[in-house]
Image 1 (cartoon, rainbow, N blue to C red):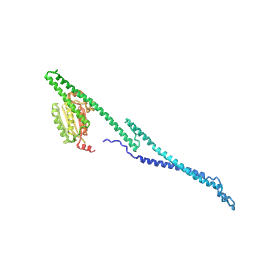
Image 2: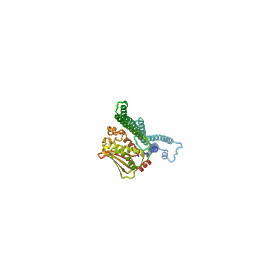
Image 3: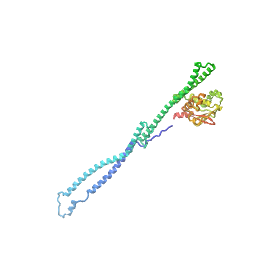
Image 4: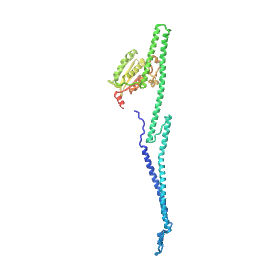
Length: 406
């Protein structure tokens, strides 16, 4: 199972905005409190300096029988006016503190948000590049919040789109290559058929035996052309999902024995010995019997075509933890190491000069691989001095159901 990298949100934007607001407010209050305290202390100190003698002090200096006038002296009037002036100053100080406090709060709050403003700019720039086709662009995932989760999602989407475009280009190229290969492989036998039949039709060949020989050659070429068209039709259906699997329970032991019986005359005609070895009494899988029969028919036919010099074909069925593995070994011509990785490509032949001789279409192994992959299995090949072995691994029935449930 493929798991994409996810960015988990540890703290949402709303909670972070509330936290930044509280921090900015606390800092603004602290700074304003300090400033207001300093100003208040300064006013208190400046407002209580002893500049003149007070009314009480002057009264104490007079003789005992002297009575002061009840009329307020200029000093008393000035002190009263100073008190009103101090109250007005406090109001102005409070107003100034409120305005400056608001400004301080906004400065702290915007400072905290500045990195988010830059991050939003990065997101916007990255999205614009992606919309213009630059799918190599990756938006940095800096935090653990909604913006970072969105950036991560955009990156995943960009990679997915790039893969889709690449796959589309590969499919288009694949179709073009397929058309080119089909045209070439159809033209060769068709040209030969027309040539031989034209000789017979034109009367240039009068000998009956020669006519019969030419007719036989044309027939063989026509059969090869028919096989190519059938293989091409099957390959197209399998490759592009046009075939629906009709799954059922299969016992691979009996299944391989049945395939061997069908190929017994072919083995006899090619002077090849056939052996089947297994320690498994019952090998149950879930699969489409017709498709798998086509797969192993292609592999058996390949062993006969290219292993005739080895005098025998060996088939083994082995049980592994989750799969049953079928190994088909022939002892004919080895496959060069440079061709091993391409052996399952359509129309690929190890030796093109042998294609006409053996009647191969170059699609048999490609069809076999696609069918095996449809069953959730795998196919591989090795070629050494100990023989050329094709190994097919198919899931056990219980593992197939387990995969479907998951």
